[in-house]
Length: 400
Image (cartoon, rainbow, N blue to C red; front, side, top):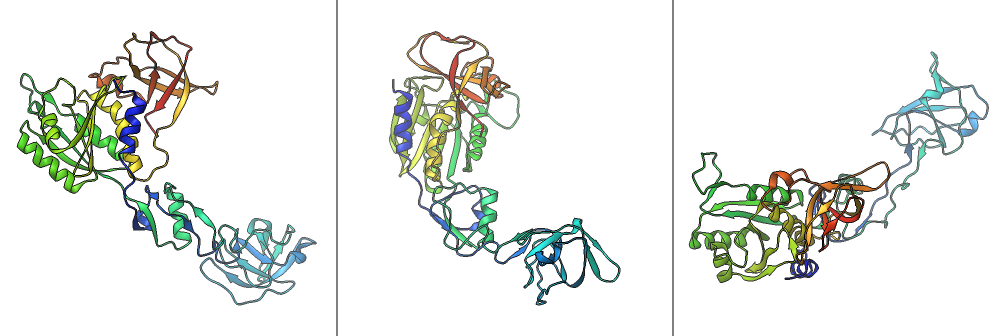
């Protein structure tokens, strides 16, 4: 059997980043930058007020209270050409350009407007008070975001503020997902003997979207080699990667295995983990295809351990793995020696002692999806007799 680390290295190493593209900055949210972003403009572009209040000369407020005539007013988005002189004040709003001649702003809460178009200042200020200087946040030439940065909404705002109209980024991978089998039912009709309801495709589509991919749903393909070959070739022509589930075990004779063995360059693996021991990876016309096992829990685990990090690398991410912790077990994590690492689904959370605590998410069978659905982490339990409560265990979070 292949160690998990070797399988991960093989699969991830076979999925290099896609070619970068130029995208409008407002379409870059959730993408990874492929080139450095260097500022060409300063932010703020001019000296402006940090508060609503009155622009003044600080020296005029050395002795308060003091009454000053209000000689002009300037709102955000406007400006005044009135030059402030000693003994005067100008009404100013947050974000408005600072008038020439002033060196401070008194916030409106420290003033009292008088009836004769004067203002009484009750608090003294120092030069520079409540003033935001031009370029205080960004200067031309600043390296703001290096290549490899994941674009968040806040970063999108910065791109807008520096007039970065386009950026070089890795686009979202377009991933085809499909299910095969005459036994699959998805239209809600009553089940006949031997039939099951299709669930893996929908589950995998959700995992792909959560991973940042664009999903192309190829539907359910019946057990017909010609039909499956047609769908796979269409998917390879339209998409950046393909995900299937089922038909990858060593003993299986399945149309998926038969067709992929003929039209794709495939590697069939037996990985030393439980669940998700069978896994297949290869390419069709250079397009990666991930063959996940058919049991739903195995499908989730193999996606998390192998497909997800490879797809993230294709989309330019530098951080491929999910967040991991050394946790403490609140319940026994029981198992028997079998030469495999057990990837047990657990409920994990941080408690008052500052440590991550985990407990088993009920049944651990590879077909028992309902028992796994609420799990938020995978505990990596080495070969042996398991871990008693109170043991340290490595966990990989399945969220975030």
